[in-house]
Length: 352
Image (tube, rainbow, N blue to C red; front, side):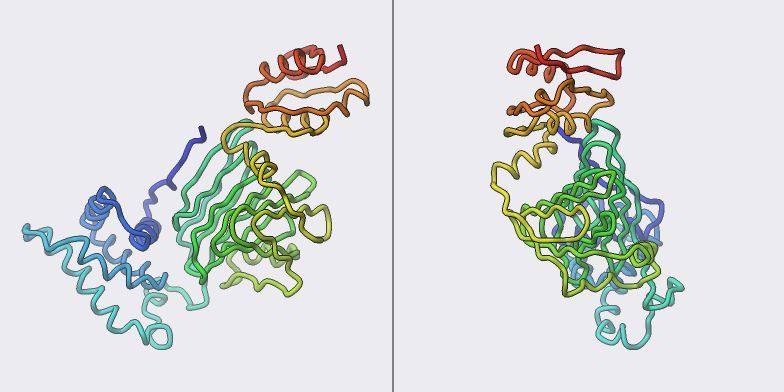
């Protein structure tokens, strides 16, 4: 099973507040309600941060529900801490209609221009060879990382950005039409509002996209624009060009250079494609050369196949990504392939 990680708690109350607003918006569990009350009462700046982020996110409706979540406490000291927050929420609700066109209160408080993209959360996620991890992002989206993968993540009041530097990810996107996810993979951008898709980016910038839910748009992106957007030099995500390719659930897009048409992919092929999330590899008639190339992604061992005919043998079966010995036994017993170890880092495969 994969390890699932919540994003670590930040020392910055703005970062913590952004996570709480996202949770309030989708509904809190009883345990989360207690944790939120403790967090709000811990520091006065936490109260201010919660109001600030709610306004930035346009989530005042979520904040207004806080009075229902926290009945007035009997303890006078605790009540004195909570009242300023509820009063602030009431005042902000009253003036919110004119906020963007008039005062710019929150942006001035943060010393930002209204067009500046304020970073609420920024991080780098990475897996080692053979490792498989899941991260829950601040908006509730789920990011799964396959073996030897590195991505950069940035979350602002305007944008949800993900840059794949190497490897493979599966992203389950929480719907937020005002802030679509922009995923950068090489010189391609994939934009999604609320959907699920898988992207593999190889070392030569070959991209393979499989959409499992909803729809995404794909377009080429010049390097300068990609860098500017991700570094925050642009306050809004780039507009997708009209030439963008639409990829729907059950379709696959493979890009070696230019973006061309999509291909339908059978449900069983999608299942095989995403088996890595359960630490499995499923082969359905691939050549031995193709199968070994996939297996090598999950281990530091190098495989050498001797003979062109051996490379063309078709392989079918389910393998555990970390079970090299099980793989060798299967090749030996079912395909008559003889493995010979050369030290700890190389295995030579020959026809028996």
